[in-house]
Image (cartoon, rainbow, N blue to C red; front, side, top):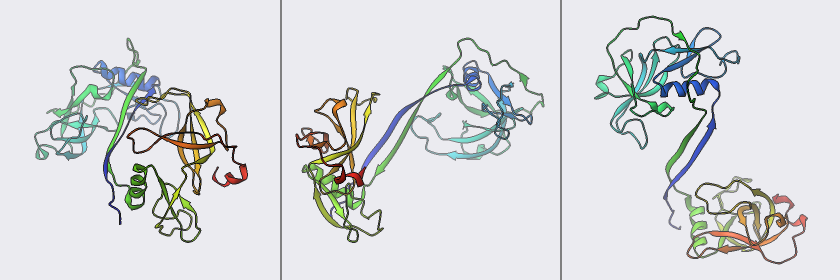
Length: 315
């Protein structure tokens, strides 16, 4: 049995979104050290505020200003904070119901240890020294001895100078990927500039990349079959938006390619031909980058286009 590969993998991208009037007011308020909630149709003050009532679905615009103090409703101790979390020291994740609010806000509590945290404890906001209009403008919560004053939240217009209208939220997932026996063999074959799949012992279809089992019959696969290297474009799309950290000029074509001898199309970039001349049935071959462990792109072979009947089941 071949050695099974394992490697760290990071999936990371910036998520950019615009803000409606309620979220814009909430984040701009944090920049100005002001916490805003919104009153729902039943009178409950929701924090963070939402644009629409979660029960009636009516649009909500009745903003109110809340105190920076509140009560812990539940918590969990975090002994080892991860990268980019609010605090780099052990802390508690807490749900805090701010005074006057009917819902709780998730954030961290700066406490010396789990023995110093309890449900029902009173806390207050510690503001960040530099604020930009984000939830991180609340640096954390900290213990605070006080009693709720019972006052009703004051109405607020939600109007600020230079309001925040959009945010960029980085998304990142760090994990260790183990592809398994079948895909480990597939990856190792790519190092030799070969493409291998596995044949199902029942339906006899060859799957590339191999999955270790037939998705149709549900039985294990073990028989390796070398396919390609040439193949046929079954369908494709034209990419017009340039991806971050991807050094490919737009527009370019990304296609599903049925390698000769395979019963499942894989995807790859098409180059060596104007993007508007790529078509279904185009015969292509792989181009390998120097020293790379994978195909860089596919280019036309110069052969006549494949007949539709030869690949229609793979579209």
